[in-house]
Length: 198
Image (cartoon, rainbow, N blue to C red; front, top):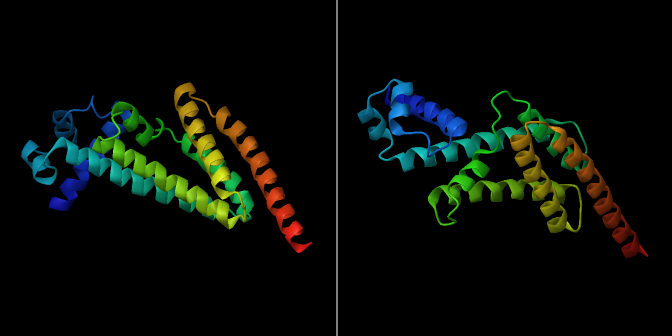
């Protein structure tokens, strides 16, 4: 029963934080919309900070699991999977409740680097970059750091543009750019192997 109440509170708070922002969402609104007593909320989340951290950590786990699973489900080669990152992004952008990235939004709202919310957001982005790097390694690219950074910036730019402009054209341009970059880096890797043979 208590676990169900906790999940109910977190679900309502997560939706409100994502739609309205963290600062604009008060505990009283979370209590009212989740239909629980304020004491029930505080028994599960002693402070608003605890509730926000729970929201961010849950969002991180759910989003990355969805994103990584969706990318790997695509029946493509390891190098094509790097481009499939952007097909997966578009699927996300097309969801009716898309309002940008929770972590970009949070980092903008709490821009002090030492703030706990900012730190959780930074950790999320670091884990995303690690996933991209893993795909780059699986594709056999030698200059892995350079391509990882380039793809990461294309992804982040696509997310921000989709949120601000409300259209998905940016992800199409990013996909084309990624395709060209992957091709260039793979050619360099291939020529490097050939030189080694000679």
